[in-house]
Image (tube, rainbow, N blue to C red):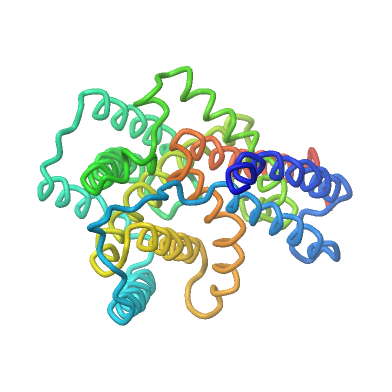
Length: 339
């Protein structure tokens, strides 16, 4: 019965994905592109249901944990969780966006510490993705840094994050269990492209929901047809450092006081909401946005990246921002969605 339910999960998701896409798309055509819309509750409710079904479908793949796995020491585990959450949120409050410049240092230090055996294919793939993110970063007008500085940061950040993430997952045995899986490294270019396209299709209701909730209104810089393509920058970079690096890093800490499955799931959730907090104004005022964004957007892409595969997550994330930037471009040029 359990196996049959597992095999039915994709079909349950599709049965929810279709009406969610239709409902949110209908609200956009009806003129919804602000959070103040009287139908916002409908958009949020349908997206929440779709999100919950997706998370249920993409559950943690590791079922049989090692017999010598650390037993959960609840007192220590909860203490470490509280300390980690407090430290992360204080760090964001004190440093803000410049904290990204510290992540390559942390990643490089971990590479020196682990001294992993990195294959030529991994090295070239990480470098290739980082160069794509870096080139796209030259046009990223939504960041508070000089374009060249941002571009160079993307190259260093993406390459070190991916290599460090794979090294940690391999060292802990999670990579061989399918966590942090890369289609390109295991199956080649064709499979990676299929995953990217599947991710784009998968993200459609969330992408439309982002427009319906007014996500495009603040992107006043988008005015040219090619600018939505810059979405590949966050699509690659944020999956690299926001998922592939930070979640395994926190897992290393939590796994010392808990079993792997619980430690990894909690690490993913903590980093997910912290990542959402990074995209807010911070402080108490940012808590509502953190909860909403973390639940509806960050957790889905985190589950896809780490429990499915990297390329599908990049496609999912790319399409979210591509649709948002496209709607912004149409808004800013007066071609569509005029109030």
